[in-house]
Image (cartoon, rainbow, N blue to C red; front, side):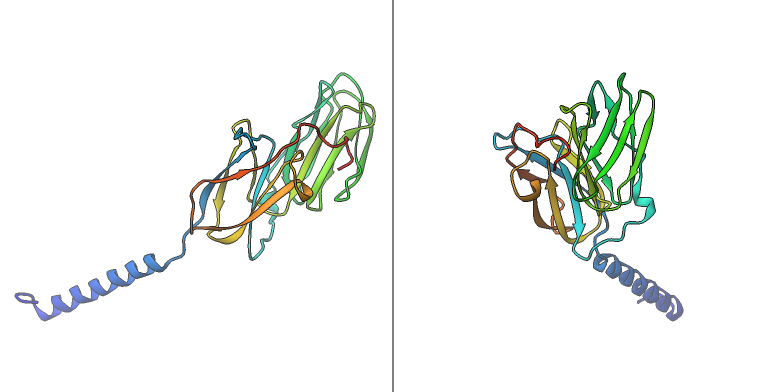
Amino acid sequence: MAGVSPRVSQWLKALLSIALAAAAVVIAAPATAADLTVKITDAAGKPVHDAVVTFAPAGGVTMPVSARGGPYTMAQKDRMFVPFVLAVPQGATVGFPNQDRVNHHVYSFSAAQPFQLPLYGPGQTRSVKFEHAGTIALGCNIHDSMSAYIRVVDTPWFATTGDDGKVVLKDVPAGAGTLTVWQPLMDGAGHEISRPFTMGASDAAQGFDVKVHAMAPMAGMY
């Protein structure tokens, strides 16, 4: 370098080499986690609520205790379960408070985890820890019209659609995996649909068109 002493020239060259190496590391670094928006619509293009959307990495994932979050609640109010669909991670405990003015007897015959919460009254609560992934259909042994669903998932990346049919999965890791949509009234084996998805290759909003029936399966008999 003309007009620059050899010592300064060597220092500048070293500094340039470090800068280029750092830039190469940034360019070569894999994509970091990002949020993913998914929208669920029916055959008429209308948004589908109460659909549980999950992302499962191809390499699998370990569910740490911290990923369980909570608290999770499936209340009984006005002789209904609230909410109609509750998504929880595997290993989570769900509370079943009776916020009604009458007694309830909550049960499920679902293969994933059958259970009974015998008759309990207003202001009382019970709880169940769900150890296995799957779908839990709920019923009340006193009020046959009551039904709801708990979807137990084995991934920390999950959410349930609202009235707009959308979810935002937070901090989804880069890489290949599977997007799955489950909804209790949806057509298809297990009332779900899945497809491969690579996070990072395309982080654009994803969409699913599904067929949803008007009538639910019998309470507690999923």
